[in-house]
Image (cartoon, rainbow, N blue to C red):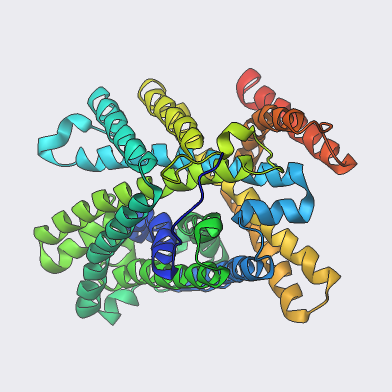
Length: 469
């Protein structure tokens, strides 16, 4: 029997969860990533489009959290409400897989960053035997910390998130003071080698697609929030804070180092940019900030992964086996956490033996979370059509189009590969239906959706593994 949740989360911890989920390792490489394929003008255009698109998704999550205040299962609950159990299950399944695979990438990045210091050179690229062993130890320490109290884990996440903002804030202050407009205007619209403005904007937006993953994280903890207003405000504040940090880091760097030099920098490029301003101590400080940031991201996504599997397994309408929908005496989804941590451990070991395959899985995990985003936006559009209001129709339509763009930018190949992982979810779903003594599918469209997933999965296996190009 589930233990009642005794404490409730307010705006501050939920906002820091959003910030901690979004701000991981990507921001530290953002200056080089964006300058590599675009000039300052194209980068500004890309940010304008991205901010508008992500604002629409933010408004969608805000609206749904208030409109469906009785649904405390976040993104999964909204999609299930809009399209039924099976499609709702796929939203939870895709989000869960994406979250625990992201944890694996954070561990590899963490020990790769440590490996850049001479005293920890044995960690190498983050997949060496010492890195794998130490990573497993760190992961299971976090596992037992979370399992002994979800709220103390939230407190630690708040502290780590605040700590990771300090070096980023220092970076922004330093580059603002040293900013040179003449440097910023150098090749403002890019060089001929970078292509047209449209090509530059498209290239740059491939990076802005990934940096906002986690914008929905407050909704995942809706059941633990004081009220739905807290969820809505935390989502907006998280979006606003991370937008400020991301835009400042990527744009202001172009006023310190010219675009063509910035494009050639090694990552984390933030460290090398600040080194131009304050010297080597600044680079060291940023590298330490990267380690703290990645550690915080690991904790955030471990909590989010376990919580999403728990949400899909709780109550009479569970869509995964009910054993995952139980809380321990510390209000932690223990069974969901055990499975999640075990799978992360398996993937870390895989990283050592099969690095190229591991990298594919990590990119695949990012693509998987985009499908739940699109489904949430489509639900918003569905609502707007049935109760016509121009503002809601605009948000739903633009959010849906932006969701489609995110999937396209993520790569059609990875979308196809993700169907393999979605097809495995059928086993979980069918077992949950059997537990509830229900037929496999409630609606014809569920059968069509399931068949499409399996067929696409088979095509992906044949195309990528049996008859590779």
